[in-house]
Picture 1: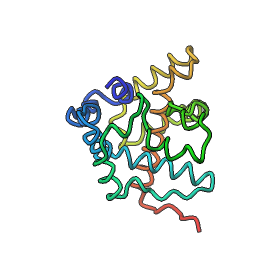
Picture 2 (picture 1 turned 180 degrees about the vertical axis):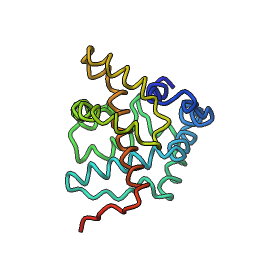
Picture 3 (picture 1 turned 90 degrees about the vertical axis):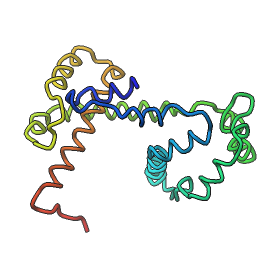
Picture 4 (picture 1 turned 45 degrees about the vertical axis):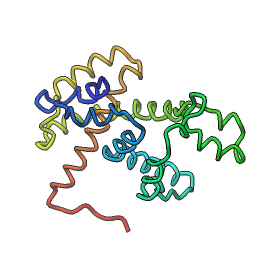
Length: 199
């Protein structure tokens, strides 16, 4: 919930309401099956698959979205929860499958976070945000971005110029990135001239 609030900080007050049912569905569940259904319903699984596809493509790996296969999803929901954890460690099925192919230090790795990738992503976001700050005046002229609280956005930008911590700026940097995407999408979408297609 705190993360939602930080993510919506730069939207005008009337656009900051949460759908309580959606939050409840996303974070409150009594069984593994309910959790699986919530990640499918909230498109979390589809989003993760898309990220894997993009990352795989960059490394020359074709990813075929097996986790979106209905038959596999239905089968996984029937597997008893005890098989997913062993000794308090999750992903036990995958760990057993991988043991014959990968060293133990990889099979036993418990963290989902790849710190190198996260740090690289945050550095790119921080570097990009200094360029995006210059475009805010142009975004203000876009009538489709009426829901953005530009006053608060610029106030925080002034405050963060004094504080240079990347962690402190994360939600601000991320918002600038999303606003840039929205600006470009609406600009092209409502343009009377279709953008040129690359051949």
